[in-house]
Amino acid sequence: MGKISYYTEEGLNKLKADLNDMKTKGRTDIARQIAEARDKGDLSENAEYDAAKDAQGMLEMKIAKLEEILSNARVIDESSIDTSQVAVLSTVRIKNRRNGAELSYTLVSEEEADLKQGKISVGSPIGKGLLGKKVGEVATIQVPAGMMEFEVLDITR
Image (cartoon, rainbow, N blue to C red; front, side, top):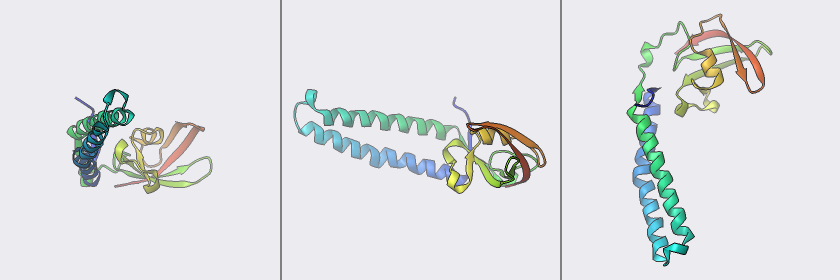
């Protein structure tokens, strides 16, 4: 059994749509590429055929991985989020103690992370460092640039 991942309903629906797209359009496109390559003759020297078969293998691996993720996915009830400490789907306002900059992030699953939207993965160094922290506590986090300290200013959902 894989690890359980928590998603917003929107995030889970996007994963399901991606999987459906791969199973229908993706498989159809690859089948067509294989057929076209096969029509060009000798398969032993047909690079297009080999490439299409490789692409088919990659697509099937992606489908299997997504199916595994979905089988262990749970929708999190956003109304039940405990805001006394940082958790999955918490929105946390933090202050970088080095430069005083205030940032706001929502902690999400790996697959839903999108820095442009302020969504960081609970598996990222900052996400891991903030989990379980309460307002007023300081998270000391190892990032590529060195150690950083973030003070938790506010936790909402």
